[in-house]
Image (spheres, rainbow, N blue to C red):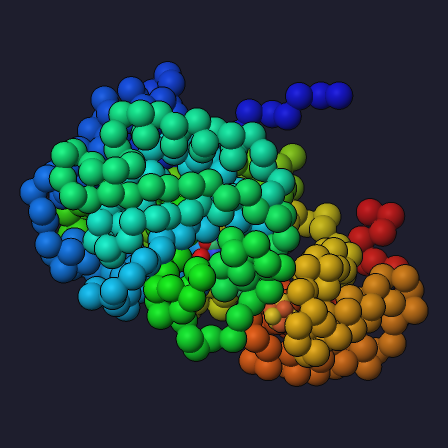
Length: 438
Ligand SMILES: Cc1cc2nc3c(=O)[nH]c(=O)nc-3n(C[C@H](O)[C@H](O)[C@H](O)COP(=O)(O)O)c2cc1C
Ligand code: SF4
């Protein structure tokens, strides 16, 4: 069996402005020694020993324009301000390293290459939010990364960066790795909380939100791995400097996981607002000298874009929304001219059908229905009215479910049919793809 290729990790930032992958340029990126050489854990020490006020930290995070990197883009500083400050009892902090969506692979590389910055970010968040216990929920299929994180936790504990009475103060914080179950739905924050509690990973109704009713019914803040990892940099350089790395409404840098038909798939940390064309070029361009056909810019739960719509777009929240899609988790899937959009949609709709937790009827039944209709087209038994049926079923899932997986399942169907309808019509009329035999 061939060994898996080394991941490509690249950036268009200099050493000072690299945020989450800043240890990359060093020979032993994930060691505690390397992280400390780059100023690691100094922000935690400054904050804890200087008794920096929680409100001042939250102000810097708000100023930075950091928006949650898990997909929804919710402002992190604002989320932190929802956590009850004077709560008589335990509160929890949770990191979401589930990343189960196809094309999403940035958080595991943060753990592989810069785990201490994540630990420091979580410890600073714990101090700010008044939590003594944290969990990092790591996707069940990435055993090696789980072990790497456990090793980093042991190093941090031994060096006195997590544990009891940090830096001789009364602040204590302990952090545990939780081995996830390998289901996409366990990335949804309330399903993840249920899973931490040892139950089946199924989303809860919201409200109540985790800030008031989270792990074991206690106030909880859940953030994505990349969100927490950005925190030490923000506090070292100031919220304004982070904001200025990006563009209005999208502060900072962002890791894009680029996959599909490019010469150099991998993780790329770039400034928010980087033109799509520049990111594509960093990834070596479309492979084999072929033409670009379409891109899913933020993961399968974001709308597919034809080449003409994405080519002039910038990679930030507003840029992609203006161009007709969204940033999601930054999982950019590139498709060349040989890609059959009908077969691609079949694969994506199978994923959502397979991963639906089954709690709500529109999602449980609707995702299966969508998959079966697309499969019927691929099997050469499609009918022209199936295209309207797909749109109709999708519209009846969206907004009618407990969690956003239902909307996520509808998005590819609606956008594929909208942008590539003639390709679907050809498939139905001829019983085969217009690319077959090419
Ligand atoms: C089906 C589904 C899967 C999700 N998977 C992830 C995931 O793997 N990682 C993640 O950080 N957020 C995921 N989310 C979003 C989380 O519910 C939550 O918004 C996020 O962890 C909050 O962190 P952030 O504000 O830092 O982005 C998922 C949401 C849904 C609906
Ligand atoms: S939308 Fe789907 S995945 Fe989410 S709770 Fe309902 S059935 Fe489960």
